[in-house]
Image (cartoon, rainbow, N blue to C red; front, side, top):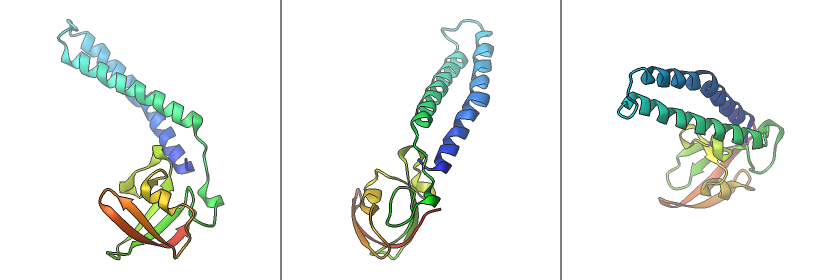
Length: 151
């Protein structure tokens, strides 16, 4: 995982523990005061939210404890994990920029490409000027690697 991805997950974990968890505990306590728990929708909703929060806390703690943090700024050469790659779609001439990151920090909308995705797997080991053929759910796509940066 990248340093930025690790920091973002760590920040989410801190927020869950310091803000979300105490808030849901207060909500459960308030709902309990309303009496009969068997038909108390507020209580059941708060318990469900508590379950989600506790599950996410466990998931984040596990991810962070097993994380191997890599600083992309110390890397160079052909495309590998952490690279920020600018591609041009050979059919539409549309340029796209992605950073290849770990599964936990991937967000295609933000340009963070999961290292296990078909595109990332096709890009690994390529250099500037190389063409890449990728089979996507939308069909076969061709890209040319314009730039590779490690930031």
